[in-house]
Structure formats: structure tokens, C-alpha cells
Length: 248
Ligand code: CA
Image (cartoon, rainbow, N blue to C red; front, side, top):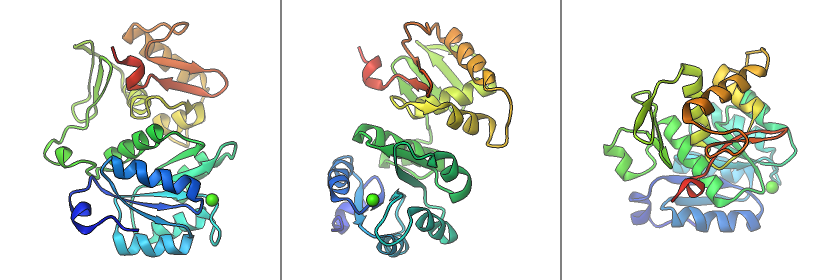
């Protein structure tokens, strides 16, 4: 059920989870509440739509396969009245990412099975991107900088530092690094990176992506064979190291 009113008032934000599988929504609720979010769980699409209208959440996690409605229809219905950030929860293997991004108005997607660390990182990244304030501390601090290991990227000032030294990055490399770091620890598909950095309408050689990755690696002093920061996941895409990997 609902988090208490007092708790919700000081929460980092209100998350509405629309997911019919309790084996997913139960641990999700626990993890998100531990992170300080107020959480509403709805097991049907229609219940989810009612909850979004009633609670005006800061973010919606939306399962694609619901018992009453298709998650895509729920996404479209939410978009008719609200610009709340939506993360779609999809089954691995379904090519929903591009469909979701281009047609439905979702902000991100996550393939099952996912780890709670992945999910909470996505939630923070989406809230950061959409300008919803994720934490009370962030409210007074306008900075949206991301630090992972000794790399810091600040989209507000467009400054990247590596071990304290500023790096001069071309715009596309900056955008690419920002997306990779915002999803640190998670593999981003080549198509998704191309869409996000160059736009969904760009039809060039995907070699361009490799050239920019190589440029980033060179500036970061990274080694493609033994990467510290940017890992190639063959046949899939790229991954920036998680904070844990770069700790210590
Ligand atoms: Ca489901």
C-alpha cells in the first residue's frame, strides 16, 4: 500500500510501479523504499492509470505485459495527460527499445532480469535528465554532475575532469561519455547510443560510434584491450565501469 503521508512528504520522490508480477514488484518496492522513494504498486494497467492521475508521481516504472492492457497503450495514455518520466520494463530479446523511444514517449527502458542497482541508477539518471529533483539535497544544489571513480562530468558547465585535470572533449564525445556515465555499469546498445547522441534520424556508418569511442579512450588514457573505463561488449555495445569497479 501507500507509503505514509509524512514519509512521502520527505521522500526523494514518488514512484508508481505498474507491474503484475509480485515476484518483481515486491523486491522493487523494498529496494526503492530503502532508497528513500515513496512507492505505489499497481498490478493492472487501468489501476496504474488511475494511480498516475491521483498521485502525480515523479517517475513511472511500467511493465510491458499487463493482464488487462498492453503496457504500450498504458504509456500512450499516460503521455496524453502527463510528461512524467516513464521507464518501461521489458522482456529481454524484444526489440522494444527503439519502439519505446520513438513512438511511445517513454524515457528509458530496462530489460528483465535487471539488478536493483541498475534500476536505481536508471531512475536517478532519468530524474536528472528530466529535471525532476531526485533528492532534497539536489534541490538546493543545481549541479547535475556525475562522478564515477576519478572521472567527473558536469553537463551544466560542460566540463569533464579526469583525475582532476580538465579534458577538452568535442561535443559528440561529451554527449557519448555523459550517456555512458549516466548508465554506468549497464551495457548500452550501439543503436541506443547512436539514437541518443546523433538522433534517431541519423543514418550514417556506425563506424562513427567506434571513432568517437576511440577518441574518448585516447583522452581518458584507456586501453580497449584492458579497459578501465569503457568496455566493449562484443555484438552489443559499450559499458562504462560501475562506481564499484572504479572504487579503490
Ligand atoms: Ca507482466
